[in-house]
Image (cartoon, rainbow, N blue to C red; front, side, top):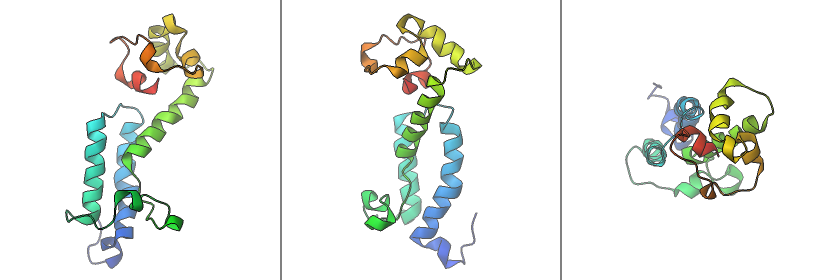
Length: 143
């Protein structure tokens, strides 16, 4: 995967760059179109941080590592935050007035509540809606 003889790749900064450029990008592609269960997100974060410390006890707290460099962190990405950011980007796509084919299913299933676009523009807690089992998980997580 990467030359072990190069000391840069064995440093924390080198490993963080590997995670950010290679490993996370592979996961983001899938997470952008598929729902990711919470237990997978936790496992992915665990694997990423174990890779960073090579299975040894963590030398720096996770909260410190993900901080900006100007705040003393290493600007490591956390998959949980990235997955949430991907979900947020869907809000703009949903609120767009275009009639794209991928909106057909959720619009039909949410028609009794006003449709997908209407619901994303309202300030409602999704818990008060009756989002029955007919709505795919992918759309439930977006609402």
